[in-house]
Each structure stands twice: as structure tokens, then as C-alpha cells.
Length: 338
Image (cartoon, rainbow, N blue to C red; front, top):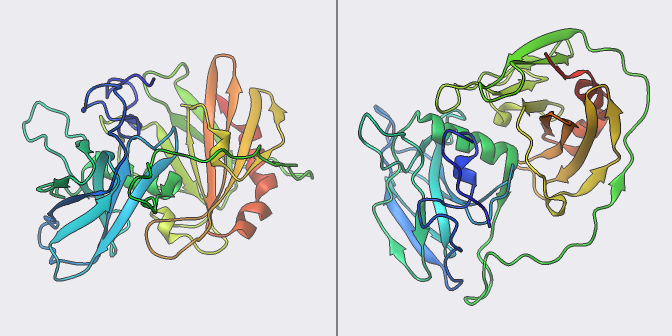
């Protein structure tokens, strides 16, 4: 059973947890035929209807650091959307094709004294839910959801039979273990002192990176706490801007318990001065241009008894990821709390 945490406690993850709006930690809806979610698209001010993608984020099937979603795309002159999804608990977000930093969502909070978080909805079998309108462009909650779809998204498909449950997962064999490459890696030259959230045990995380890497600026996390950082080997504004050889890194000081069954392979462990590093490989089936970003990842944690750092390295191609593994491990090795 998963407890519902206060929004302030895990602000960047609150929407990925099982839906707390709909009865705390009660089970998801009974399986059955899909239902329909629909609504109006209130485009950003001065923007005519334009191509965009609507994401239904499945709160019941998402797991720490991986976001399960359904997607539907609309094109002009449409200013409404409709998406068919299995019974479940969802939040809705959208992004314009023309702007990787655009983000809107279904947010019902309207008053000045409430938190404008994405509003979860519960859809039952065969239910038609209307008036789930997409608005609130520029919401930091919607923006963070879109970034997490890019970095951690897992596309879902509606079960082939009406009686199938989307929550059923086949049992998987143990992961193969890939040996990490070995070789000389020069110390990384450029240091960054990253401010952590007030809830963190340490105030700063020191990160060393190659000289030609850039910080990818994301807006402040919801609540104004900037504790998640992005860096890239190319000068981009989002993962969607990466070229074939580009790499983007997400780093933060919150480490979830990763589910090995969600990865392609496990990497051999290695020790550092501040704890054991434990990483996994994730290969996407169909990397594609356009949104969402889908690529090849090297994901893991560096844990000590009283602290933990989470890393995700992602690239458009498996070749770019694998070519940089020695450098990734050096970044992990040199990272330390201050």
C-alpha cells in the first residue's frame, strides 16, 4: 500500500504517486473496457489552434522516476481533444509541437490561497468524462510533468481485449548484467555547487563536469525550490533539442527505490568515496523525433548511509550513451555533498 504524501513533502513527485484525491491509497478502479476523457483546449494567449500532444498520465501505473502515459495528438483547427484510456486515475498535461518549453494542464484550483497542482481524475470502465479542459499554460506543475515524461516516460497501450486490465504486468526474467567499461578518465575540470532543497541533509551538491557542457535552465520547481538540475553536452533548452551525439543529465538528491523490472540491463556496481554507485540501462524501443523525447538512458544512484544522489544520463542514440559511459562514471565518482 502506498501512502499519500503531502504535496510539499515530495513536490516534484506528488503527481506521479497513486492518486490521493480519489480516496487516499484505495485500489485503482476495476478493470474493464476503456472510457473517454475529453475537454476544451484553451491555447495560450494570442496563440491560434496549433498542433500539440495531450498526455494522460496514469497515476496507478507510474512508479518512482518512471511515468506511464497515453498520448493523443491534435491538429488545427481543433480546439478540443478526446482520448480513450483504460479505467484508472489520471492527470492531464499538454505541450505545443512548436515549443518544447510550453506546458499546460487540467488544474481546477482557481483561488489565490490554493496550490495550483495538476488535478487528478478517476475514470471508470466505459465512462465518458467531459470538461477536462487544458489551460494554465506556464504552470510549473505542468512543466515539471512534461519534463518527467521526456526523461522518464513509458508509453502505454490499451489492452487488446475489453476485459484485460491495464494494471496487469507480465512477470519478467532477471535482468542481464552489463560490465561497465574500464579505462583512464581524466578528472573533470568544471565544478558546479548546486543548492539543494531545505529538506536535504546537506545544503550543497558539488558536481564536476566536462568543460564543454551547459546547464539547461528549467524554471523553479513548484513551490520555488530549485533542487533538480539539468546539464547537457549541447546548448539546448530541453531534451528534444539534442542531436544524435548529445547527452542530457538530470541530477538531484532524492533517490527512489528503483524497480529493476523496468530496465533493459543492470550495470556492475562500483565504489566511490561517498558511497556505492548502482546503475541500470534503459533502451527505448522506438526513439523518435518530435515529442515526447525517447532515447537511451543510464540511470542510477550513488548512496551513502545518510544521503543519496540520483543521476539520469539520456541520449538520442544508444551509441552516444555507450560511447560516454566512462565519462558518466567519472561524473558520478566525483560528485559529492558539501
